[in-house]
Image (cartoon, rainbow, N blue to C red):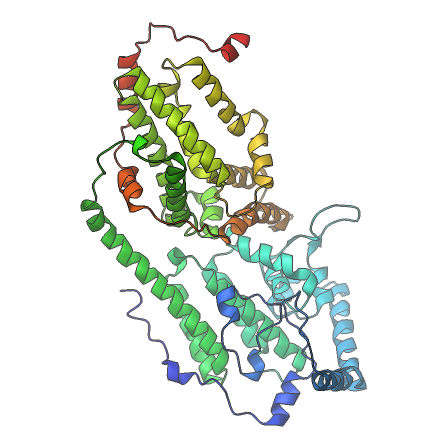
Amino acid sequence: TLFRSVCLPPESAFPILLPTSSSETNSEDAGEGEYVNLYSSSQTNGDLSHPEAEVPLCANTEPAESENAQEVNQDDSETMGGSETGKQDGDDRRAKALESADSGQCEEEVDELSLIEHEEIMSRLTLKQEGEDGPEVRGGSVDILIVHATETDRKDLVLYCEAFLTTYRTFIPPEDIIKKLHYRYETFCNCPDTFKKRVSKNTFFVLVRVVDELCLAELSDEILKVLMELVFRLVCSGELSLARVLRKNILDKAEQKRIVRVLALMKPLAARGVSARPGTLHDFHSHEIAEQLTLLDAELFYKIEIPEVLLWAKEQNEEKSPNLTQFTEHFNNMSYWVRSIIIQQEKAQDRERLLLKFIKIMKHLRKLNNFNSYLAILSALDSAPIRRLEWQKQTSEGLAEYCMLIDSSSSFRAYRAALAEVEPPCIPYLGLILQDLTFVHLGNPDFIDGKINFSKRWQQFNILDSMRRFQQVHYELKRNDEIVSFFNDFGDHLAEEALWELSLKIKPRNIQRRKTEREEKT
């Protein structure tokens, strides 16, 4: 299999501490300042005890310091700031960078992945004009956007780094960005200059984030080969703590992929032993049904990886978006299941009673902020085979009020307003997120004047960021196996043609449906 062929260094190859002399430690740590933490929560707790692999401080974190620590920091700052030589070197670097930018050199002649001076990096980016609103970075070459994302010691760039890491797949494949970050890291990792060492470590932290956020579908043989080469180089160069972090990251991803494969093989076998519980929907309380629908939705929603959603709007490739595909199939199956159990009732009063039951369930789903199941049921009740049947006036008018939430005539204004006021946990309607991403993708060019249009990526990031926020807060609901068994994975439903056949049998086309008061007014 894919992962059996990968040979990883044993855990014993990564000791917690490396013997270093105090003079070496002081020379490497002096004046390195703060780093913005680009690790995920799982990586923040990793053991980075090597002097050159300190866990970077979060941008908003101000650690308390003892008097001794403050004195050490003051001594370090005096060593850096008070040294005329160090200050002169920094000034010389900036002067050379500006001279290089003003000398009329063609950008093709410059290795942008090797740039380190902030002024020169900024001079190669397309920035917003004076008086314009929105983020500062509007465009740039692939390499300069990557380099700008590695300036993680600048706290004002945290949001840019997040936007870049969320959207880079739209203009460069994961394996290519890993290679470029690897190249930039190795360019400076062995330099004695403290500033260049910091550049290499910042680059490594971004590389770890890229690996940590790879979708399981992206973990190809080529990416594994590139990553293992980097682990090997880190071990050979003595950077054992950094190698340990990257190695753990790779192993975690490989294990996740193995578990997914095992579960995929087991699911068909488990499904054969599950049968729908005899009984009806009326055997359960509406709020209990709403909770179990939310529990099932949440299990699938939290599995969706953000890149899946971004890539779906561009490519609509089920293989690259397996969890998103499973979630949308769940939505459709639930909707058709609702239509089927209503229309299969022979008596009009039984159909009416079931429809009212689902309206009550929707009310509880709204309280739970589960817009996914809410809209799945609503789309069923408002579907043509169901809507065309005879319903009590009060029932029809009540359903019309719920339909106002998804009124598309004003770009779903009511739903967007409701979602904006929601506090997590929440399961949004992904159909609208995909629609917005598709609109941004089709309505904005990928390049402007030969450079990556990063304004487009800002829009994509803002759409996806709300979804990421909802995924971070989980529901605390207890599973009810009796109700879940009754759902039977919503597999027992009729196809569209069969629904229409039953609908026409109940009410042939030549019979006029009684108009509601709302329809008569219009």
